[in-house]
Image (tube, rainbow, N blue to C red; front, side, top):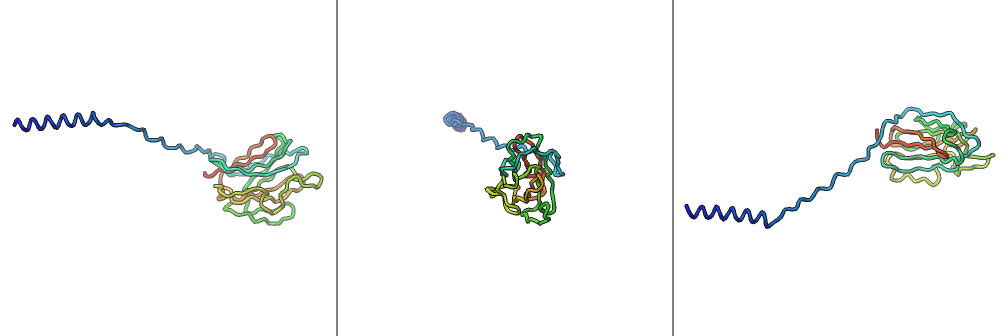
Length: 188
């Protein structure tokens, strides 16, 4: 009996010393990366503002990638935000105004962007885009929503663009001084 008490005591001492001799280090696990909170309340119905510019011209059209959306920007230097009229809506096909020429646009949905500003001044182009062609200088590789971007032309003080999208998705339109911005969400 004395021998078993010695073994039990030795086991308890060893366990206690082992716990003290080998400190445990608690390392906090890295916090999971929070997903970006993406607003999706923009809707996909037509958005229209009938304002028009007073002599300003389109000089550039460009795109950008954001965490929650892809962005299309039309530059109209000198135009104030309240002068930038537009119609932005989904269409079954992009049809050039006034010729009626159908312009092929890749993607699962087509968003037509009409800006109430010309891309010409007294007949001379102020924007280098060619009707029916992809936007100059725009590369959509790696975009989550945009698949294609075409210039349809400029006629009677307004200019027409077509954005090929992955699918019909919510979008918003922002009027800023010198810029009309169309953001298309990556998801609903």
